[in-house]
Image 1 (tube, rainbow over the protein chains, first blue to last red):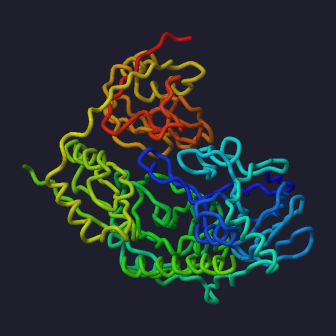
Image 2: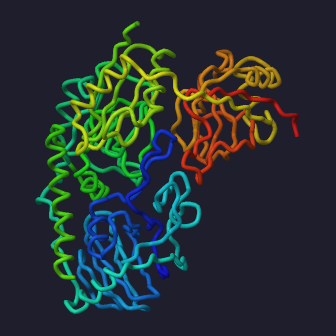
Image 3: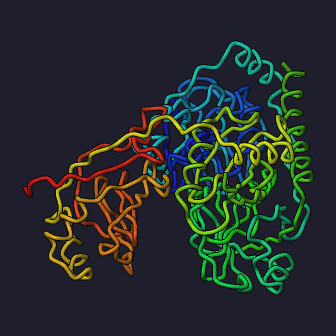
Length: 323
Length: 218
């Protein structure tokens, strides 16, 4: 059991989302930064798809009723157990009754609290993810966590329990957190069907400008503010299926990037799609900060994700070497 | 066989979008439904999402290359599988107007007819599920009597209850979750069109036929 002692309005239960229902009007939802969630799960001996708690700009405090391994990944910020600071990207053995405090993210947006055994919220359509927009999954009818919530904790398998004891002897196990190059993050994008229907000036402005993450950005998508973009002639398309990463430009001329709770269909012209390896990096950019975009080919996108997969595999290798 | 011309474009590294050129046609739409109905048509495909005049094919690039998949999709488009599994017909009982159909009078007024005539003409229609989307299990129904088309509301409502029977431009639909919408609410049904405990949560499928049946006002 996980007891939520304190939380802000945006902490939710998330896993890797539900696959296969876009055509029924139900998007995947799931973690905003899936690679960060997977790192947390690997550190705590969980399968990649185990559910964790996603939290952001408010303190989250919780208590477990059994011993467990806990790892906080994603956006940086303070973490402490019973008031003593612990590192992020770190598998920390905690005891039943310990209080874990995850401070608001200090840089970046989304933090993941992975716990060995995983959050055992009920499954809806193959996932425990909270779908805030549609009101299902996670706890209650798809609502954020509240103080006083008690969430069931899944059972650790035998290997994880052994591993936890090994890690306790090492006094924890850490990873160096992934570091972005300094300066504005460069997000890689594959061009989409209407890219060349934008005016030359608009295309140039899109690829050359810095784009500020605007207000009204949330788990559904981020609004980008920058130069006005327009197509050669006004376009309203027949409805097409949407996925996370799709960059659309509505009549306002200011792009919107779909994210974890992407709409399932849309009709605005689409400039491009953010590659899978960079979706979490984009999600981690705070409101008011700027990003730039760079065009890549499918081959480059696949190679970028393969590089991320190799890093994730490295986490398991370290963990297995310890256990 | 008439060749319907199509193009295939990228939707990220895991997506290909096949789009039929030209205006919306039932022939193209029928072909899209047939392509979408069989997930086993192509190797490495994880999901197909039929749109209107297009189909999004999501795949695992470790299993199949985009080039090979594009070729297979185009071949299938030219020689599509037989008609999809028989489409269903749904009869949806509706209470028109009143407290639960609060926009009926205004909408009928815009259309230049009485609320009774508007409701009767809506219930007389024969509709086809063009696509699902926007909300879970939400079917965009084509086939609305042109005289009944009214624009969406200038200011969307922040919450409309599941079961609302609505008009949005030239389309009609039933709300399946309680959500914000700019569509006009003309009635209410207790028909359950969404079941999240089922692995096919939407009761409506693309290509299904829908009729509305007026219930006696409460």
